[in-house]
Image 1: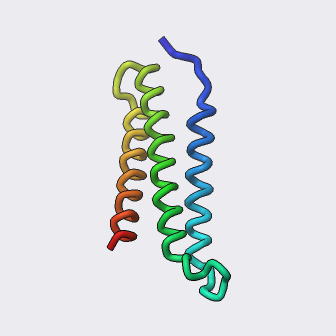
Image 2: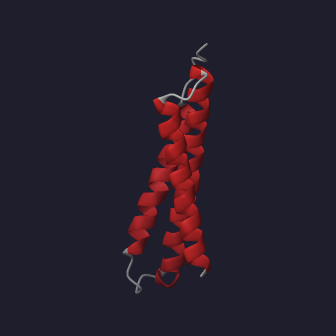
Length: 100
């Protein structure tokens, strides 16, 4: 039985993740002469980590809703789950690079 619910939450979290990734990519090219240039490395790694976590949450919620609606592993469920795992793996990778 389909839930008929809106995907507004997933869209908002996903858009926030994409914006965070965009800001992180922009921060990568910030010159060191900028007044926050000394923080540039931590900023873009932090933004990539935040983007990965937000996208993992959005795709995870989308996969859960698709699974509840379909009651089986359909293509939207599998694709959303794979994207959530990939986003989480990216966030963990950037966190490890930042720590090292």
